[in-house]
Length: 146
Image (cartoon, rainbow, N blue to C red):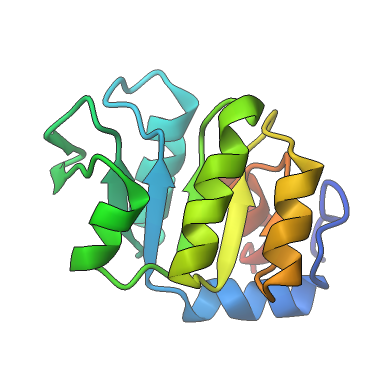
């Protein structure tokens, strides 16, 4: 028996599960090198779940043993990015979503507390699902708990 999802997402659970199953590379925008930060904890979970995590943080050369990129577009020059996971303040999320739209990932994810309805609408208008104000690690663990 699976637990219910914490809140609605733009995709039914079956479609979200399939998208997450097919994804290989997740760019984590705003990834902190500090282990106590939520972005670091989520990225570690994603690594353990088998994803390739690409840090995007201009203040660090490497995080979690991976080269850290100054921007999403810089990361995309070296990696095909399937999911963009955003750990930035809501006020900065729109610019990240706009960058992500140009890269055409399969999914854009705005973490807990990150809300920008206009940015989500732009992503969805471009054909890219955008989950907002949810924890990717929590939802992933619920979707794949079996």
